[in-house]
Length: 386
Length: 139
Image (cartoon, rainbow over all chains, first blue to last red; front, side):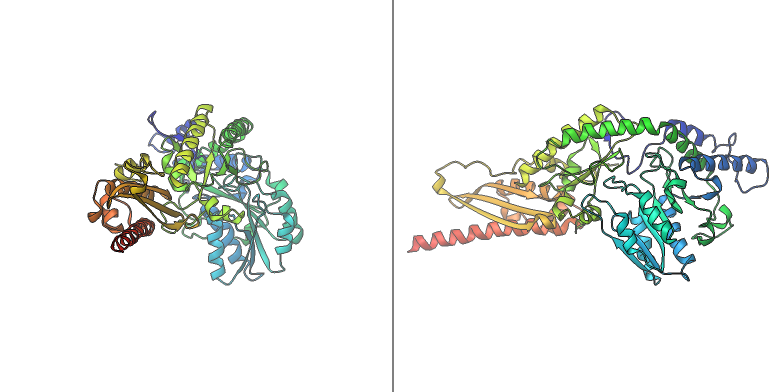
């Protein structure tokens, strides 16, 4: 990327592939590398299959899961769809009720809406003003016919970490499987599925310095029998997800997970420091308001509302920065972030929010550029709007 | 390939909002200036615009605005204020024309309707005040 490219503070959207990961992926593409189809029985297939299984172990190790209980998908969106639709359809004779929250990612909310059309009922839990779900809320929402609870670990917009272990205890106590969307937390916080006691967990490579287009779903041993596939055609992945495996992406995902596990403490410490520096600078802007719980959150994400400033104008004015706004920029209706609205933020505040997310390659200089740019634009746009 | 979602004209206008604000009292005796305002929209709906037009002896001498909205909204307000001061009121057109002229995406038309409402309100207020003044002269 050229030196005049904007400062990238949008790691929650995606992260650049780690150069070591890119090199490993490249080895799986060309004639002199591991280009075989893992389903083939010849030498090239066997070599590819071995690399795929090694990667499965690396990915499983990130969440301390047994390797055979990880299935490859195209990303967290597919993992979430498989977990929700696959479980609901497989268990429809036992019950037709699902519990989730209003602040989930669209890849959870939309399958829930879809399953409603198939005759299921879905309870959408409200969060508190900090974006948190209390385990008691989950307990109160469970019914005799509940077949799945789906609660995300770290929220993609505000970074809040849900009390997943306590929620899992509630679910386990009632014999209801818990699905956790860990797309924003895997590799960033320590996860042990044996301790969390969730039965399904989604994650993806491109949020942790791996490639786009590859993800995984963890399932407990008990859950395998009650998971209906979404994709048919060849019976790959023990019938759970048909399709030729993309070896280069899988190998990249595996190495990205291994690196993430090794670098997690250092990455988290750096992100926490940079996020604190960013908040220290931006909180000096009059009225700046932190969205989400101040401490119960991933280290990398900071979501701030700037009252009196329209989000798209703020975003477009920050030419030296790459950050996200929660609002739909191209929409005439200008829908504000449903996550911030669920926290009780007004439409105006939800529209005036920016999400900053730092990562492994972020620097102090990046943060200082962001502070200066946001301070300047908020002042300019407030003057125009006053 | 243009990597800027705003387009060149909107970007240029958006980055230099020289007509935003209240403006300065224009030359001549303040009492000789006719100042009118027109406002439309709400922040809750994503767009709020307020035009302030100043006339001297029936001639528009200053156009200013306050605007809360998307970059296209602000750019169109800036362009309109400049065009009004340059004496282009008769050919100022409406939102569809502004979209074409400034290469504003058609999905933004709803927001430009708010701009039009604010401008119309200001121009109607000016016409009303001018009519009142003429009536007083007749009396």
